[in-house]
Amino acid sequence: MEVTVLGSDGTWPRADGAASGYLIRHDGFALWQDLGTGTMANLQRHVDLREVDAVAVSHVHADHFVDLFPFFYARRYGGPTPAPRIPLITPSGTESRIRAMLSEAGWEEFPVCFELLEVEPGTGLDLGPLRVATARMAHPVPTLGMRYEADGVAVAYSADTGPTEELVELARGADLLIAEATWLADGKDYPPDLHMTAKEAGEHAASAEATSLMLAHIQPIYDTDHSREEASAAFDGPVEVARPDARWGPGA
Image (cartoon, rainbow, N blue to C red; front, top):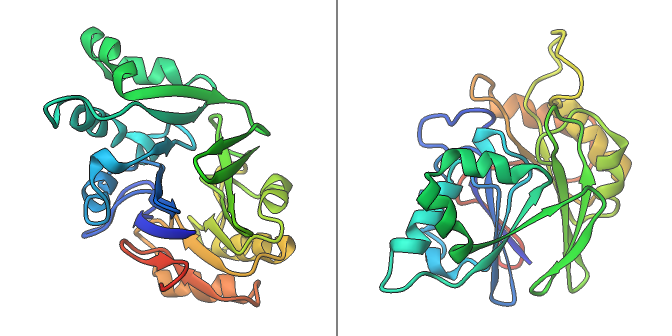
């Protein structure tokens, strides 16, 4: 399994960055996890838009799903015929948000390109060669943490979340945990059930006994070196910061 970072900035993209998005590939199957601002442009450096086999949206905050709409237009109108219909995995209640962003005609065309599958946390499913597990994250809107497994390799993704044991269990023994680290442990009174600090990301990776940790969703106001140092103080394994075009997996 190979993971390519398409974007990882928290809430808004920094210069030359993008919001959350990851390309997960295995045995010729390509899944796009989260379609945040700017990730569609970066995706095209790695795979043709018509070669994406499935899409998963962790939650419907704009920095995680707005590029779904240009992706829809490209698959519907970017060739002599529409691109093949593919699964779109989302939390429950997403349909109304998608409909609100499209014209009536656009919504009628949407099923030509996507099979919308709204899933409840805890649901497992198979997407091509990938076995997918989901868990409820601690965030103000329905949010799915995701775990992908294939051929003995496991990658867990926190999406956006405050500290939660659900993430520890989702990432248990994972080869890679991609964990949000929006803030630093700087003594500020951050709201609960919203995001984690880099220290908390490291603590979750340690509790889950993950092999390696990739820090994501760091707000652009923070120095990512400080985030990595903070996480490394809590987690003994390898820690890296997710950056566009970074790869994890064989040959990375």
